[in-house]
Image (cartoon, rainbow, N blue to C red; front, side, top):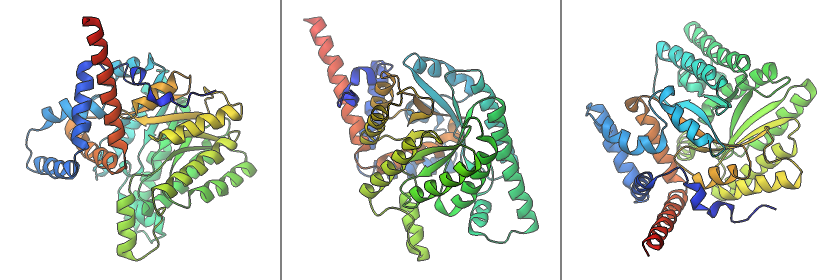
Length: 397
C-alpha cells in the first residue's frame, strides 16, 4: 500500500543537495515567489542580451546551475551518474531556442542524433527529445497545420523539416533509444501531430520508440487519443504519449480572443486537472497498446497514477510507464517515487549559457504562472533547511 505522505520526505528529496546547493535553491525560489519579480527580471535579462552585456557568469552561477546540467553533453555526465545512484534517470535536452536559419536547423538535427548515440551507451539515458520548431521555421509548421498553400520554396522547406525529424526517428530506432517529440502552440500542432502519427505507425511495431506530447489543457486531447488508439489497434502498431498540462495558456487564450475563435484551452486549472487525469487514466487502462511518459509536477496526479498501477497489478517499475519532472524542480516527487522503484526521470537541459537564456526565461515564466508551484518548492526547501539545522543543534548538544 502506497504511503499517502510519500512526497513529504524532504530528507530523501534533497539527498543530493549539499548545504550550499540548498541555500542557492532557497534564494532562487524566494526571488521567484516575489510578485512581479519574474516579469521584471525577464525584461532586464532581455535588455542585457540585446545590448550584449556580459551577464553569462551571473546567470551560470544562479538560474543556469539550478535548472541546467551543463554547457555540453560531457559536462552533464557527472550529474547524470550522480542522480542515477538514487535510481533517477535523465533525458538530455539541448535547450537552445530562437534559431531561424536552415544551417541552425541542420545543426540542431545533428545535435539530436549525437545525443541519441550518446544516450544509447548509457543506461541512465533511456530517452531523447526533439522540439519541432527547433527543426524548422514556426511559420511553415503553422501554414501546414492550417492547410494553407505553400510556395515552391516553402514546399522544399517543409520537405527538409520532415526529413530532419525522420532522420532523428531513424536514429532513435537504430540506437534503441525512445524519442519524445515536444508539443507547442496549437496553431502549429496539427502538422506536428500528423507527422508524429506517421512516425509511430512506421517505427512503433515491436517496441514504442516514438512518443508524441499531449498538452492536456487542450480540451480535445482525450478524444484525440481515443480516435488514434482505435486506428492503431486496427493497424497493429503501438502508441507512445508524453502527457503534460501545457505551457502556453496565456498565449493561447490571447490569440483566440484576438482572432475571435473558440479557445482550444480548458476553461480553468480545475478542468485541466480533470482532463489530464482522464487522459492519463485512459492510457494506463490501455497500457497493452499505449506507452506513457507522465510529465507532471502535480502530486495528486502522480499519486493517482501510482495508485492505479497498484490496483491494476502493474509493477511500479514497468518500462511502459515513466514519471518525468524538470531538473531543478519537484525533487520531492522524483526522488521519493524513485525509492519506490518507479521509473523516475529528470529532463536535463544543457547548452551554452548565452544560448540557453531564452529557455531559462521561459522556464521561470511557466513556473511562476502555475498557481502554488513556487510556494510549494519554497516550503519544502525551508522544511529541509530546518531539518538540517535541527540535526546540527542536536549534534552540538
